[in-house]
Amino acid sequence: MSSLKLFRTDTVNGGVIEVASRLAEVEADVQGLVEAHMETLLGVRFLASEYGTGPVHGGRIDSLGLDENGSPVVIEYKRGVDAGVINQGLFYLAWLMDHRAEFEHLVRDRLGVTAASQVLWSGPRLICIAGDFTRYDVHAVREHRRSIDLVRYRLFGSDLLGLETVASVRGGMQVARRARRQRVTRAAADAQSAAMMELAGAVDEVLLGLGDGVTRVERKQYRAYQRLRNFACLIPPQQTKVVVYLKADPKDVDLVPGFSRDVSGLGHHGTGDLEVQLRMPRDVERAQDLFRASYAAV
Image (cartoon, rainbow, N blue to C red; front, side, top):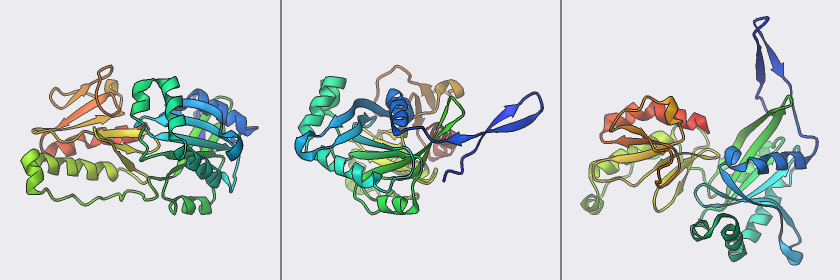
């Protein structure tokens, strides 16, 4: 059961009033709400609802989407607790992996040729959204070799929705919170500055250590750090700097020329509107408040 509590401040009497939480009347209410705002809530672009898997397979996938890193996403919903939600989702995920061309055709129709050509088949995801999960569910996701997110929902009052990540695993193995920095080989130093590689390793360690459930996704152009959505994207080290894009709002940050800048509306690899440039070890310490703000933003 969720321990999340929500209170409304009472400015008249100077107290607080608890807003009672509740489950949806029917599963379809949750599905409709998430599908209507999927990119905002989950960082996933909506593709299809109740997608039929054909007469042989005989099923219907609640929602199909494509996340911000290009990974295919199957989303299954349950109003309350349902012991079968994970197995049902994995059943559909297996179907998806066997029908890649069909999925890419769907992406091409909905999002265009470029998105279809960049589908990341090495990292398909299952997101299960339910009223609650058991401890057996949480244990089960860690035993599978798939990327699975368990998300608990609650409705508060008449106009508030809460989403809480209960478990998040990538490829069946969660990335360790504290990753040991990799040694820089002479061959790597010939191509890139050894100092920048070490600096990127320090950033990686800090981002992974921001909290439980942080996972990372490797793409050719960047490395994404996620909770349920991306909160940071680390670009491969350049000769003189390491660049990180964050989900923190640039309008809430005191921008410093040469260190941080607003890249809203500018094209770049990865996600996030705040660019941070790191050139020396002390810049990592300097950027930690921005890293934490971005982590909290998602």
